[in-house]
Length: 243
Image (cartoon, rainbow, N blue to C red; front, side, top):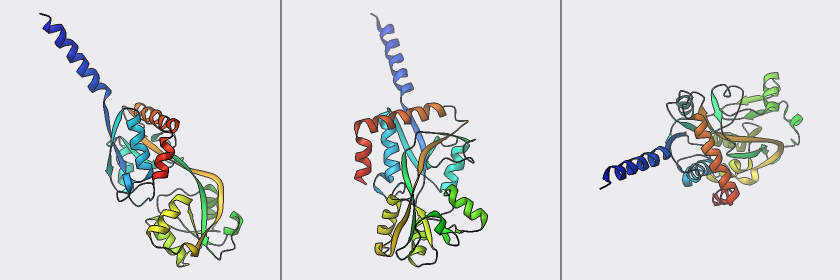
């Protein structure tokens, strides 16, 4: 009887299956509708896309919902495998590997409906709002550093839009998807606000992995592979449309 060879083969097969099955934990956060929030369908658009991208690559992902700063730091220390959805900047680049963009969005300047602002130069002398931790577009950062724009940094974007509706600030930096979600959820009068300026520049959100993670490159490659598969199949657009 050739029991031993059969057992050896089955053991090797089981090991191969185990070795190819990957499960990772991803830090995620709340109050970033419609992209990330536990209260949203599938955790929001970004959460949904990332989960399905890993699934398409044959990986299993699970979210650990944490305060944004804590999730960022744990990922940086490789105590959590990855984090979403984060923008790329010079401060983060030395510490993280960045995936292909989960999504790209045009930046918009939202103002009161009666605002006369039509270009970036019209923003000088005004008061802006951008939540703490968000990246300032270069043209805004330049004006803030020059003192020609005063920036308010509340805890979330909903607060920014509420302040804008109340005319306590002059403009908010956001994008159409985020703005529409907040205006609806916070019961803000949509006729009181407008997207006064749409920038040709895009803001992108990424999956990030600590550079010292032993499987960092493998995680990013798997995600990129799955994301490309979603786009090729049309599922990427279908997921966005479903939200």
